[in-house]
Length: 135
Image (cartoon, rainbow, N blue to C red; front, side):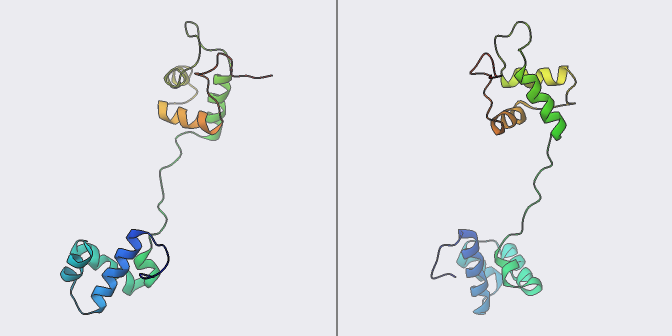
């Protein structure tokens, strides 16, 4: 694994730490050799002893953050964007969409970045066009 193929740097460093421990050095010596902290080397060794090589060198999936908007809230925002912008605005902007969605009580709270990602996933760019709805 260390000598051939392409691996992530994290994986190679963890393997090198295990190899240093196997050669009889302590956690401090292994940490200095591979550029980790002694605590990190000890955690790698503990994972190796408890769950094996794969658990020691590879990371498990991370849970990630929960979705901010439900599917129905997303649909309501998209429908609002496909309608005419409010009075006084020539076109929708991301910040205007976020503010207007809260004002119209479509969602309890939403940030402009969440709106931008939602629009990007639907390939909508209302700030470029005066009319989003196409025939």
